[in-house]
Image 1 (cartoon, one colour):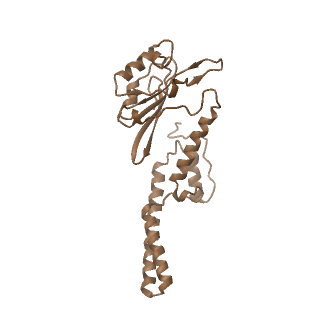
Image 2 (spheres, rainbow, N blue to C red):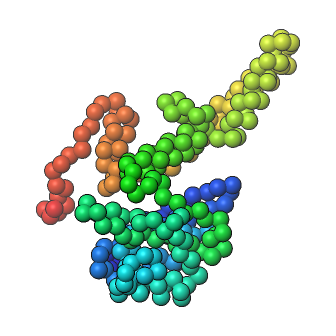
Image 3 (cartoon, rainbow, N blue to C red):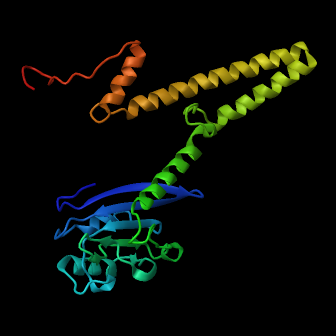
Length: 249
């Protein structure tokens, strides 16, 4: 989200052990007086806000407090918010001239504060690419854990727990039919196989419908045309010509 005061923020939801957490990343341009109240809408005990507020305050190591810093102080004092300092109060920004400052803050709900360990990913004088490497590594680990069977290339996005149970039932029926060779076991195998195929078809249809519902031709133009090309069996390029309706662009 981005409000009229040019405060920029985006929010993600993460889950750990079936517990949802709301994490908001913020950037406030220098000398901008932000609308901080918009950050604590639906504020709860599992909410976290972090980012560059450009708010100078003696509370977090600046020699003097500026207007934005005092605004942040009042915001923290008047709300159910704790400001968690990093280990040792290390600076979070280093300029090329050698100066250092502390524009980045971590804010949490008081109920969550005892469980927060705030530390920098890399020492200030170290290679900052290590922080990015850690983030990318975490994203890859999460993606591998969420993709079915852990295979990126052969992932079946429509696969679910119900299909897995039906497949296991089919496999057991196949084993019984192969061992006994009896007619009844063969009939059971055909029934289990038919039920699995029907469930797979329904799951694929549901996945397909969800894909179409979420497809935004304004934001996902290339993705949309690639999908349509695959359906038609030929390559279709997105037209760059303006669209005219009733003689108007």
